[in-house]
Image 1 (tube, helix red, strand yellow):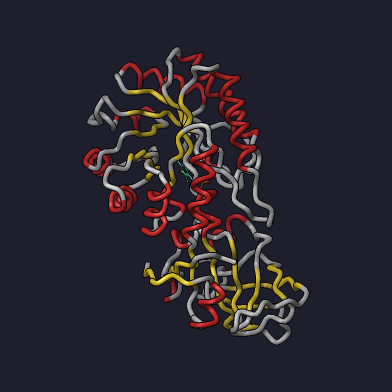
Image 2 (image 1 turned 120 degrees about the vertical axis):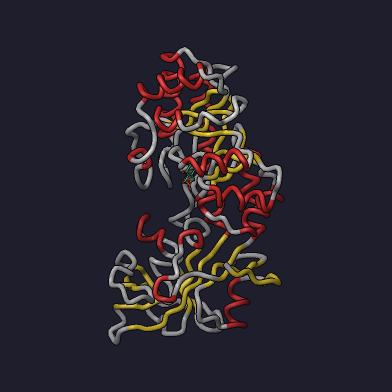
Length: 378
Ligand SMILES: *Cc1c(COP(=O)(O)O)cnc(C)c1O
């Protein structure tokens, strides 16, 4: 992805001056630093960053500048992206299914912590040094997230007990990890998981050094910022209740909640049917708007004219298509756009730093290719 310097004051200044015809992701390092600081100052343990949410070098280097030194990586390419901005970063390889080649790359790149959810996958790690942490990932049928991560990865608590015993008997540093599912709006999901972690530890007889409470922290999708401190205090209280004062060290690995707010996606209206009920944008579900397909519409959207004047007409729900010739390239119906929106206007989606640039494709010659650094997003 192309990166443009110098930085602009705001998306509005850049749009009015340049009138870009491609989608642009506006990134504010200042907002990323503020969010990182919230995790680093208030999470009761170690904050790592889940690189898949946004692996852009500007994002990674600003997180390093904020003081993040450990990263959750899922592939050798993500390891290299992290090493490119910080040579001595700590890598946690938390994709529990890996090819032999990927394992060798992980060893060569100095991974310190590996997660497993199955004995067959654990057996593949025989060349990993015994000084490494091996973290058993477990899953519960707990609701609260936008969709269920446990359907793919994570051992049942009974299977996790046996894996934890194997990890300990092979001489690795045993720990537990889980992921409650992305955009988890219910803090008590963490409560259930931490209680289950205590039960797994108790039943297995293996003391763990760390407990990784995953990502899944919710981003702002409604206009009201989620209460991260409440989630942190729920985690801290559950940990104290489950393990007492000498429990395992906590760590978290936010992706979405760390980067979402640091970027606004600007798209342009390229066409509209005569009755205005159908709008065509220059970006869609094969580009930077894919998260809306998976998560539903966010309550946050704004239309501005070519001089960045805000369209203030009452909101009219529309059918919105992306630019490709595929009819699936359609946002969930009912995106509320100002009645006076016109062709050539920009539609801004705040809070789209996560799973936007990271997931864009070049399908049909479209897609989100450009990130512009701005001082502020308002
Ligand atoms: C995706 C992922 C994360 C980040 O999840 P968010 O919902 O974006 O916070 C953290 N850990 C693991 C293992 C993941 O796969």
